[in-house]
Length: 259
Image 1 (cartoon, helix red, strand yellow):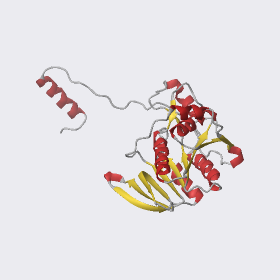
Image 2: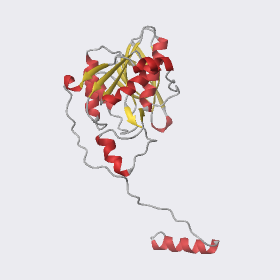
Image 3: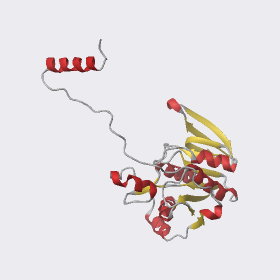
């Protein structure tokens, strides 16, 4: 089986930028912490579990973005992926979903992948669009929010469990090739092993120029970014019980909650 696992290098949500750096975060990479998108780590983990179940499975990891995004591939190969592909596109994190999906689909079209795995969403934009767009572009069935994958013994299909709204699970059998988006599941992504990480640091990643894939231009333009304005605030009433109760009644009457 041949699997393509897509990974994204994102700004670590724990690394909170100052207000003056917010625009820089979108326009270009700034002095922030970065890491692999967690959902994509689950996609790599599911690919590795399939490889353990089916001999001779090959896992390619692919990322789309500026040169520094290669670090996402280092993490994927450190976990156990076999090969890394970096589609060099854009000079910032602000690549819209259609451009990223087009890069993945254009590269994958001639490679005969049995499975294309993406995270359910990226933690920065949280749009959940890339996976379904890739499926449409490569004309393959798509299942979203997958938590477990069980391949058929002959490798012709996979049975997946997916998460629906309200805590309901659904089991679907999908004929390959197919595109799956991976939700946080029961399988915790494995730690990258040090020997693999060291080899990945010097690995000759395959690099593909976005212009060679004739990617579409961004159809979205970054206009403005600002912190949300504080609209509500809490108020702690002071004094004794009777005084606090009277003050609360006055507040509710003033705001029209009491006749």
